[in-house]
Image (cartoon, rainbow, N blue to C red; front, side, top):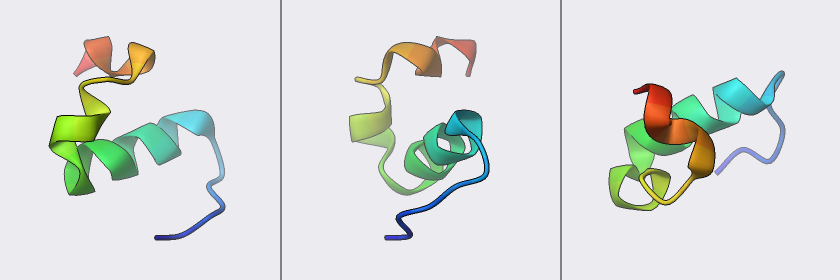
Length: 32
């Protein structure tokens, strides 16, 4: 998994696409 992202939102988007179950746990995922 890449360790660097241009922005926090890109990191969250990556996680939401690749780890949806874990992404739900992120506080910023509510916008999806």
